[in-house]
Length: 585
Image (tube, rainbow, N blue to C red):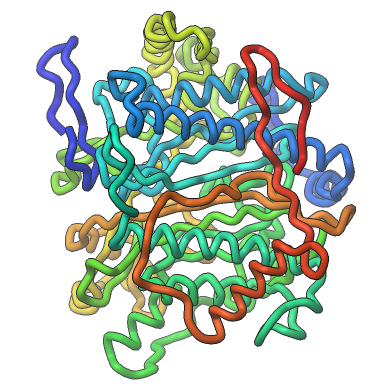
């Protein structure tokens, strides 16, 4: 990235692969460590009683889903109007997309359930392009003007929580040439990943729904239950059929009040329940390809047989009615890769001296409060900011723009939006020093910006690994039990980090949706997602027993007479300042 030549100049930053330029209050500072402990009875209330589905809780989930869906429609229309239809003249930058959508969502949150004190943005709007996989949500004062180009795959993600009940969504959009209708669908590696991700998401909605009637499970699944191992094998089978790999960090996990995965690496969640993909799940296949045998060096982990009463992820669990799940699947295609290798994640480093091979550099802008850490801050601005963060955001991520008195901006007044953004910039700049002290004292942690990388297996096998499994990267947030990325080869996270220089960037696709398996109406309530993907075409297709099973699962989820009743939550109908009442389809 080329730095601006003066304070008033801005550079047009090309994305990787692009061709164009309950919670502690402010009194926490006086708390002792003993006061931070949670009694078992209180823990049972937080983790169990408050997560038993009831009509009031379902209403809160529905409202969160409606607002999230409305926000997704809003940012999608902004992208279409600017990049496909050319209605805006000047292209809308990623900074503007993020702040406009966050402001739009924040305004919607003020128009319903006013009796609920705890509600807000659960996931700041982020926009990942091509190989960017997580955390890219530039602040309004970022010097670069980030724009898209034709052929980019753009993933937009956002989320809302109402009283701690969370609904998140991610959707990948293909950027077509502006002006005229596209001559044909997107084809190639990116299209393969879009198809595989969409099919896997729809199949998982149906499969989770069948936990209401496990006797209807089709094919080779008949007579079993919806377990973590069944979920993993089905998603992996779809990925293999489209010559794709599931990106580490993908997960299909249970969501509970205030526990939606937003604080991974900070909080070890008791009774974690879900399927999580990491590098170790690619290892066995890589060894078979590399050695031509079924050689297995060692057991994956000492946590392999851990029960789901711990914070360590395991596939040994059963999906039951009355639970809420987040389906979050990311895939990359290997169509342009001619050798065996590993798909992993690299954190984007804003310091070019430390990472001079990475052309794209950006600072993390999404932060989350670590309530286990307490410290008496020196700067007045830091103390004021900390009080603001504790009062407004609790355990959910935030951006500095949210702390401004000018947030949210009025998105309906297009004439004053530039001036409103300038006012936001001043507040963001003033709060940076306070955030710096909070970060240095570990009171807040920044969520890293990550990209997907492909590392050839040859580089991994021929590399020296003197520290073995003991070289753990303490700065990389991972779930418990997943500190060692390649346990059979004994490759540590630090060694894998060193091998990133031998890798290449690879575009990824993401789709995420939240579903409620309601035991009240014996139905599946899809809070977010559900829309058709962009116009793409793949030469790959499902075959054999996997095809038959998935087709039956999807069919059952669309036929409530003989299968599972699925209801899709619609977005709010917004007309100026008026929002229609909640609607459930």
